Image (cartoon, rainbow, N blue to C red; front, top):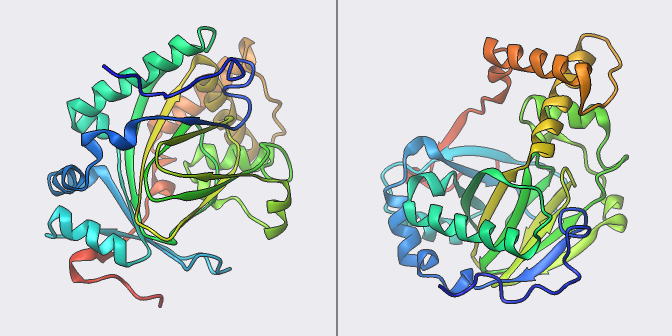
Length: 301
């Protein structure tokens, strides 16, 4: 099987990969799994509860528009056509769990990464998704709680990656958003762009950035298809538990300190696990569905 990565120079060592934004060349844009016909067939048979369909605002507008929808009875080809015509994106979540071929591809990706960076922490709970989005669409300023890679298949994107430090992200925002899986609610100021690392991604390029680094994305003038892959390491998992536990303690009026070891860490882990089991966090994650694509692309009202 041909390698996924085209090149991986010695500069992309463990002291860089995972700590700085890294752009690499890949071959996934040539893979038959990502042809338009293959994507249309995948959409047409995708479970209704395993995708996210979003209508967003005009690129560059200060107004933040974000509506969730459903496909309805449209064919996969019609869905892609609609996305190509409107400000929409669909995220086919956990595609590796839906299609065995995508699981095999995901395994190959991380086999190659670990082979290239032998000292990279072992990854687990790896997930892939396919993001199909409109020309000139955007993804608002946000951060991710897991390790992330963004693979451009077709179309182009401009990705702005910001430092994972204040004022771009604060401890309080990190805690609250991680706790409630609300990573898109962090505030953004246009002057932040002066401090961003900016990458133009074309087909056959992958971008990786450090954990929790805020970022936002603007599509070019053509339909965009991307693969997203995310993962955990033991350190990332501990970071999620500690951050979520701190968020609960801060809501109780305390001023917690960040720690990833010892009795304090395990206490926070237990507090978070109890809150999650109780269901108190689930209600804040619900987003209503406000349109059906079968009935047309929604207007901006």
